[in-house]
Image 1 (cartoon, rainbow, N blue to C red):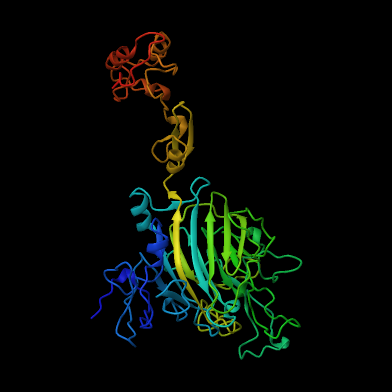
Image 2 (cartoon, rainbow, N blue to C red):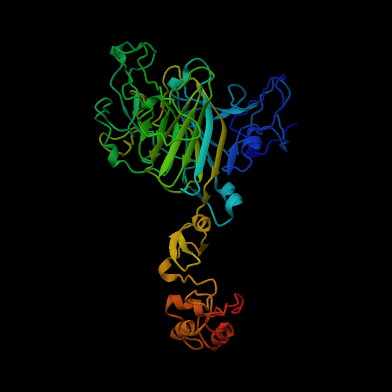
Length: 501
């Protein structure tokens, strides 16, 4: 009998692996040994997980796993299909995740993972989120494939890294996929067997070439969501009817989509600048049919992100971010959306899903015909720094800036507690008695010490005078004077760095 720890399984685990498949090291173990979080789905059926590992249950056995717990992928399937484990079309075998995005109204579920425990393990118990900066970028990457034929063009699936966005996540304003309804596409020749109405995601910018429906509000008024994301979204197609264009009168996507915290961008070469890199990037962010792997990498800095898509070619661009905060959660799939009230970012609140685009309740959007399923593999987060509130950062020259702890250390400073400010933090010289930092302790320094003298039990009121409190009892008294005089050797005499200890 096989036993499975709850934290290492997906909602439905299909452990039927070809017997001829060779054992190999897990992708995470080989390629991401220092990652903050890495999930290649290869250890899902192994306890304890050997390295290299392989799930090898009895043949032709479907093993249903217990419900997930919040420290790995937690399924949410209001429409009937949450992510599950799969053993074909994987970037690294034996396993990957399969995410449904088919036509039918019950295939747009999702799974979420919280990163908090991994962050604490990696950075320390004081930290519950990770923050990118220009000095310490955060990298989020994954691989996806549309499986057979050209199905990826009709899929609705994205990968998100966010802050505090774990399940249950009900439909609401903080959803990047809230939508309005399209015109009726039936007159254009829709023969899909479905209604001719399609959802159009509103969080995208209207242009003369791509005007948005009048029911979608102005994108500049959209509230910022604490997340960024990338993936394939056929429902971004704001001309889903394609009248007179193609035989497929339903939504499709030809390029990678990226969400910056406020809006989705359908990426194409030249839309944003290429920041350059180790190799040329001639690609157009195009989606490729068949079993082609689409490797997506987001390199997140303080205010920008470099988006890379690798298929048979490399595509790359740098995009300004609307959301620039910390991260501690992941989502794969399609977040529960709502239909918006016309002209606003508010949900209409109506449970009326028997009309256009309806299923049996407001959250259940149908996918586009031919959407199939998308497999996801090799999800990794690395870099960044543990997030705590910025605080004072003191440098050896006694200057002070307010910075995150990680940035302070990288810049050569000494961080104070989070939440402190330079105005109430004393940045002392390396030898506190040498106030003018000329390598000796003489009358010039003694003059400064006198101005700080408070006497016993009289608290210090001048923040810089904290540096004269050698015994750290919140006053400058005779005990501190004794230590100062022990350092005072006169001008041009090199001071002993331990004299005030």
